[in-house]
Image (cartoon, rainbow, N blue to C red; front, side):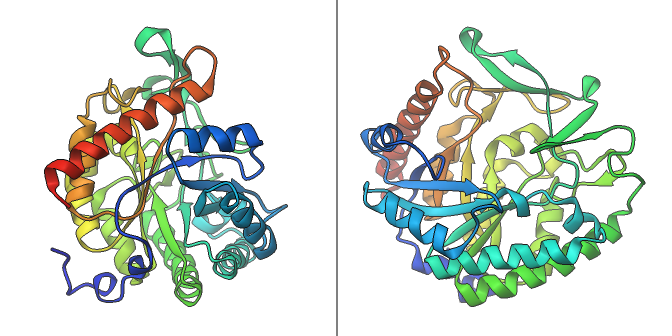
Amino acid sequence: MPNTDTPAARVSPLGRIAPGIKIAAQVSPEAPEVDLRFIRQMGVDHVVLWTDATKSSAAYYADRKAHFAAHGLQVYGFGNSDVHNQEAIVLGLPNREAKVEEYVRHIRALGQAGIPYTTYAHMPNGIWSTAPEETRGGAVARAFDEAWAVSGRWRDKTYSLPLTNGREYSEEEVWEHFAYFIRRAARAAEEEGVLIGIHPDDPPIARLGGVPRLFSTFASYQRALEIADSPNVGVCLCIGCWLEGGELWGVDALTAIRHFGERGQLFKVHFRNVDAPLPHFVETFVDDGYQDMYAIMRALEEVGFRGVAIPDHIPLMADDPRLGTAYTIGYMKALLARARAEVGR
């Protein structure tokens, strides 16, 4: 049962989300008609979308929401990549205030458009990968080998070792910058009825390039949510990132699901698998990694998760990205059907 002693459980805005796990597709907001038909043909009726600052506005979000609704698809979340993984926010750089204000405008635009959720990541030096590797059947997949890692990327910017952001930063100064940001963001989210799900660091290495990456341990997530102190700030739980970290997280993915889910803090799930934890992992097919993904789906059902679960970082099958998406969503739907039957919700 939910812990009713927590603020999130007392006034959880998740109550406005229909019960039940929703399998969703991540797609361009400008997706062609054939892609929208493809999504519906898979039996999916929820989507998550991303844009950037050039289009971020209440009018654009509302227009896309209506467009997808006309095709039988409900927009659960909308992200803005220009207020995501921003070093100015994480490290308190001179343009921090402008970026925080831009983030708040994004939240208010979502609220005005009636879109309930957005994902936020707090990495100051991007997502790190090494050369792609092959997984089952020769499918090409993202990989990370710490022994060969030299740089991270976010959009068009590269962050290179040894000091990715110009100097060493202490953990406490990064926590201070997080507190400044999240309290502003949380206030806007509560006023607008929007959920903010914080994504783990990818890869979840607690210090990289001289900079702390806060969302790399379970204890840090707990501290962050205590600082936010808001029912509208919770977790976008990337199962793949959690598996990448393995024991570095302090608890396994199933424990994380139960902890955040029971407290009304679990808003979205990235449903993916990897072949092994750090220091070297390859993203593999959902049924081919070291995690039993049925155990993940069952845990989500047991805690009454009512957000969306999306396929993520799918290996390329036969040079057609749609094949991997269809394979993964079909597998997820089968796991969900089994979990519902066995848990009995």
